[in-house]
Length: 273
Image (cartoon, rainbow, N blue to C red; front, side, top):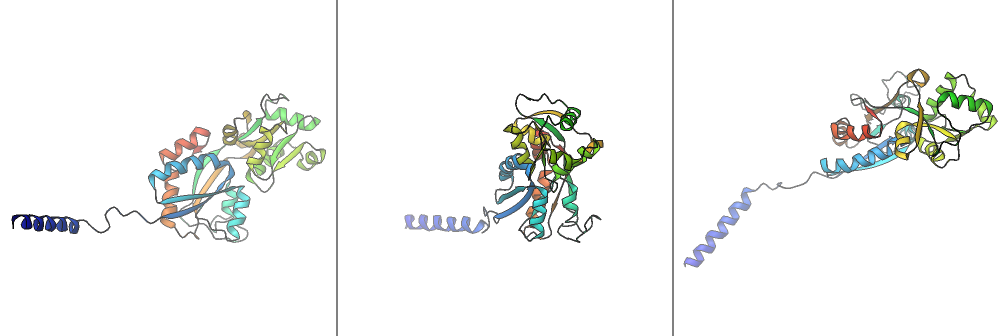
């Protein structure tokens, strides 16, 4: 009888302990796949940040689509799934923001109240290893373009890095069409393509972002001033087509925090938020 009483008491105790534990204890949050469209110049930093964010939000899987901001804007406009958009210039974000005042097509994709200016970058003149042509400044680039002794790689006109380069050429009163016809300019569809041309020394120099030069191990010989091409601002926003608003807002907030900012600063970005 004593043994039976002991067993009964033990079973009662186990049942009591089991019932005292909430059914949801230890349950994980629902898994979320967050789709982030980001400028190609953010490839390295966001991939690094994704590893850090896994520790913060293990239920969130970040899926990145890196390309030129113009291409990403078009994909969003055409209905691609996207939760967060980070552009390398305000122009592409403005064209998706109904309240921007610079939205000729009346597109409405930005979730109002979420848009921020996330980062600032620099427009850099980068050269291949050894700098064979001895280019040491934008002034030297201009002289080489004028006499035909220098081959420059730049972005297409529909991508931010190309648009910044166009402003630099205009600042120096250079005619891009004439230079292209003279065969002293080559193009890339995004900043990574321009960076590759410089890294492979198929050109004498390229105009890219300072962060891309850092990531590719390229030498920067000069940096454009705001007077030459304006500030290089990266806006970010949650899109109103998201099906994961809470997770998208949380990730955007994380990008403004100390941990993510340290990653951005390490390659030359200047956090703004």
